[in-house]
Image 1 (cartoon, one colour):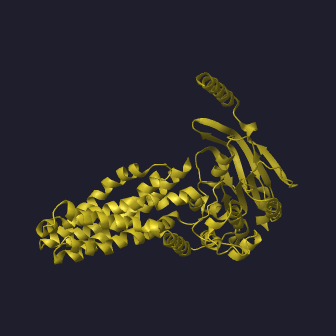
Image 2: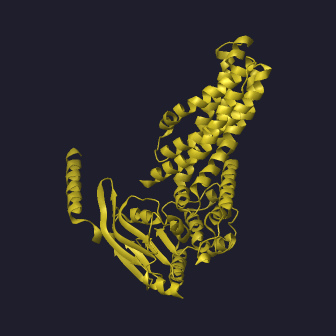
Image 3: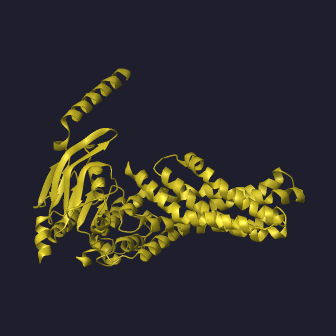
Length: 236
Length: 232
């Protein structure tokens, strides 16, 4: 009982003054964000704003950031093990072996991080019934993406970190994925995603990374870019 | 709370990674045979280039077989983490709730089974071709079995460091080659010494010690290198 009370108070995931740097340029800084069970957050911003960099930092792939990330009130690099068991990251790259079949691919993920349902059920849920034993190199880009998305059905993780999950999938797939995200939110999970699509989820919160761009560094980059383009024009 | 976390076992994760890599290896047979064919061709060319004289070849045989086995291993290293890096499996390994040590270990074990072990098993045949004296075969097998396993492990560190570079092949050789030299020296010397009627216990013991050290330390170094490679 006390557990559920504390759960309400403590955010599942908290970012404190988070900043990321790339090629000696500060992409964003002072990002504060609390994610409570049920939250769905869409990270917005133009190309190169640092969306993927942020998600990679959140997922624990990159530890190269300023500020702190807390998972259930524990600092992340220290609580990485618990966090890894409770989070699922889908990146730009699907993480699917083309030489293997969808079922073999998922079986590996199942052994790595456990599963809530059977592999074949997860594949059926993303519309790949009948493709279980087809080698992945014979699948289309959208189907390959669906194999990766089947991990959402398979996983028991509460935190989903999804980088452009809607790429390459058809309209039906998009609406199914939206339903899935809504279900995850209803179950008390947290979903952080980037997408250039407009989502219709009622509980959606938007975070625009442009709002966290350090002004001084931003001006400087704009100047740099201007210089570069005019140089380029002269040479052209 | 406990049932929130997936019930995964260390051994289950290791077996799954091992199975997965064996399956992938079995489906890329052409890539597998490359180092083996290189080993075969390179050793076959030596008598043609140097001398078909039995006494000359017998003298050179231990060194030649060992050097070619080393180069064959080096040839197969670049692909160790490459495909995992390219398709995103590597970042999934880094953040999975499994010990990365055992995942790396499974990959290296598969690498040895499909490159080092075939080279070791082919070596006596090539020894015969180079008229290696009879006393040399057993030490050749034993030293290559120990040596190629060490080389797969050491090579994994180099492969992990260079995986994010598009053309890391040359750099990989430069990183790994100096670390292979002690293995080569003791491996070739074991066979040499057996041929001359000496004892081989010392050399094999040193190779065993290299292997023990590599099993403990190389995966740790490799997983550190993998984290650096994927951080960018």
